[in-house]
Every structure is written in C-alpha cells, then in structure tokens.
Amino acid sequence: MELTVARIGRAHGLKGEVTVEVRTDIPEERLVPGASFDTDPAAAGPLTVTAVRTQSQRWYVKFAEVASREDADAVRGVSLVIDGDESDEDDAWYVYELVGLSVVRPSGEVVGEVADLLSMPAQDLLVVKQVSGKRAMIPFVDEFVPEVDLEARAVTITPPYGLLDGESPEETGETHG
Figure 1: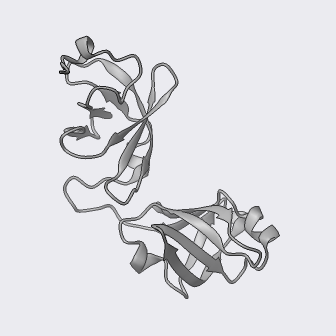
Figure 2: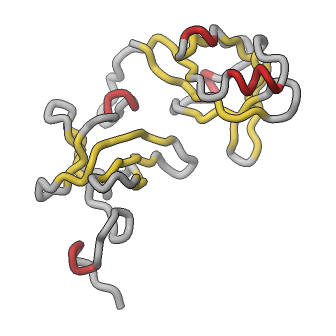
C-alpha cells in the first residue's frame, strides 16, 4: 500500500529548496539525506533528499533532481510516497483510511465528511467538509473525536461550540457567562 510521507509546497529561494507539508509521525526518520521517494504523480519522481532543515516548525527539503526555482515550482503539490504496511497500533489511522468517512454527532446527525488530516505541532487536525460545503478543523483528540469506526465508515465528533457552521449556544447545549 502506498503511504504519503509529505506533500511538496512552495519553492524557497532560487536553488530548488522547497517547503514540505509533513504527513508522517516520524519525519526526522523519513526525511533524511539519501532517502529516495516515489511520487504521486509518478512522473515527477523518484526524488532523492540531499538536505533537510527545520525553521519555525516548517520543514525545508532539497532534492538532487530539483536544482532551480523553476524545478521547485514544477514539483509543487507532488506527494512523496513509500510502500507501507498496515499499522498494528490501536487508535492509529492513515490519512487514506479517514478521507471520505462520514462525520456524525453522537445523535447520528451527519455533519459532513472527512476531507483531510493535517499534522500540526500541537496535535493533528481533522479537516471536515461540512454539509454546507465549508471546511472545519477539529482537533483530533479523544475529547472531540471519541470514535473512529472504519467498518461503519464513520467518525463521531463532539467539538466545542464555534468550530462548526451555523452553531448557536442553544444548539450545542453550551451556556456562556
């Protein structure tokens, strides 16, 4: 199975360095000089890491095959992928397993569907495309995402007031003051 390690972002400077959106829990083990990645789309790769650095919680990578700003612009949006195995960890999911799942409240009310999972410094964020079409970001922590049921193809959420479209304190049962 193909797993995404990172997605290439914008060019940084003139010599081909790029930012990457990390999609792995262990970037310091995967994004190392000498590592070679297949790409999605496949025509962009393979790409071989020659240098890696972090600054202000951002990852910057230089690839042997990307020598200029023009080359860097050409690979923007490309995903770095590896062959991976199913996780044997409880409560661990790959992004591809979550995307497309129905997002519901404990009452069964459909809120939308999972659009993405973003790895952030504090915690992961579940990106939900709401029924209205707007996107909401829900911290992927037990308190707000108490259940992921892959068999039922549903994620149950209990987010605090204000994270979803059209909520009022009366609808969520919260009171302020």
